[in-house]
Amino acid sequence: MNRILSLILAALLLAASVVSCGNGDTTTDETKSSIDVVETKAPETVPDETNAPASSYDTTLVTENGTALAHIVVAEGAGVLEKYAAEELRYHIQKVSGAEISVTNTVRENSLPIIICTPESLPELETLFPEDLNWLRDLGEAGSNERWGSDGFAIRSHEGKVYIFGATGKGALNGVYDFIEENLGVLWIRADEEIGLVYDEMPTVTVQKTDYREKSPFEVRGWNLCANNGSGESELVTMRNKLNSVGLLPAGNSTAQTAVRNGMVQAGANHNVKNLVLSSPIYDPNCTEYWNTDDEGNPLPVEESVQINFYSDKAAEAIAAGLISIFKAGNTKAYPAGIEDYDGTGRVAPNDTLPFEYAPGQFVNPDDPNYASTVFFTFLNKVARLVKAECPDATIDTFAYFFTQAAPACDVEDNIRVVFAPIYCEDLSAPIDDPDNIHNARLVNDLSAWRSITPNLVIYNYYGCYWPANSYERPIWRKIQGDLRYYAAMGITGVLPEGDADCKDVIRGFSPDDHGGSSNVWGMNSLTFWLYHKLSWNPEEDVDALIKEFCDKCYGEASPHMLEYYRLLEKGWTEGKNDYFMWSVSPKELYLYMDNFVYLPDLEDEMIAALQNAWDAADDVEKERIRRIKEVYENYFAE
Image (cartoon, rainbow, N blue to C red; front, side):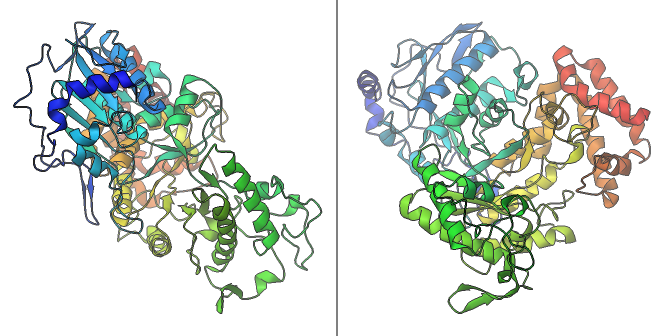
């Protein structure tokens, strides 16, 4: 920590350094989870300031009439995320108020200090807010039904200063984003800031909400964004919404790319076992044992091998060597080793016709439903043990998907993180634990079986991945909330659904006349994606209140009409869902969705009227947020 800042803060905080802020219960606005409930409301306790000297400035004013009355303080030796958090706060204050606020390494007189810190950059936090730090550091126990993310935050007003801090740098960054939302009224909904950075001009900014703390029940919260152009801009939007994980970290040196690499971690599986063998430093091009066989047991060339030979020790050693080299390079602590994107193991004759011994004297038979899964995870356990011997802090991400969705009979090594991806049987019309939904019953059974084997489970739902995503928004808000409540109650590690990056120059299998690319997916689904961001931080949020907040801030005078559109959309989905088809390889799935509800009495006319009324009431920026939705429905109904 910068010595000057440390000395100044120590002097300014001397009175507080001998008094704990925890006079009573400090569980303020904290996220609290059990099997039955997750809540964020709790009694407040504010540090005792009865003996604090009066400030010479207004301790609630950040700016006044476009002039800065506060300053941002971050230690010169602070971590990169604290420094980035300071720049993000400065940037958004300037956007909202027009005021140029300074970022300094020292606390100044006659100005409100907003101090962004962790215990490493400001050791006095340990004395000032010990209960907050203990609470933030309490992550629960692996295997329990009460677990927490490590990137929670606390925001405290104390002796004329505002402290935004976490036990980690990412926690401090999350606190800054929450401070911006709560006190500046900002929403982040799209990568393009012209339409995606939502705020009202506010020349006078006051501190309206402090003295609370929050943490999420999920350590992993993110998206696996397909069609990514590598910009990092979509991931920046999700990071600002307090997500912390991404399927692939972006390359490059732009501000967005660097910020994402610093603030997010790579998580999630990939279909890459063949490539891991081929790129291994010990790969032997003359070895045929790595690959599948034909029905007579003759090795196939690599191009015809749909998976690899999961019975092969040489294949396990090759993959382990590749992973070890990746981890020792120091760029990531988690890396995928997942089955190829193919619903089958391929032949490995005659092994795949014989009972398989996964532990001494313990067998599965080829007709057992978890036979292939047991073979694969026995194989991956070998890889994991070799990796752990060289890289004990590394994590291998892998899919429970297709033939590995069923939980194996074997145990799973603790350095393996399982990404559960229900590609076939997830029913998006109902929460996963809906007792009346027969389609999701298998998922609940599979998840329960997995949960009994390993605490390291990440769920890969298909919330943003469906063929007509650029032409139809599925109003699955209640389903997402129900899913996340269930996952939190189970002590699941986290959530990493599939979606698409918000970029204009990539088209991923959608209608051939759609030149908007994946940005049109976000244009249609901005509300659903934003709600997922909010609920993955706190599954107990009020969904209806969030929808109203979104519409009020994004659509202004058009809000009542967009609220009516979303009401009709949800009505059509709910009443027309009995005949819908959840997953299809055909873009015509659009009709299977829309036709089920547009012929409900008067729904077509009501939806067009709501969107037209919204258009008429919207300003130019708000029109751009409505445009994709309005054009799709007008074109569809016209046909």
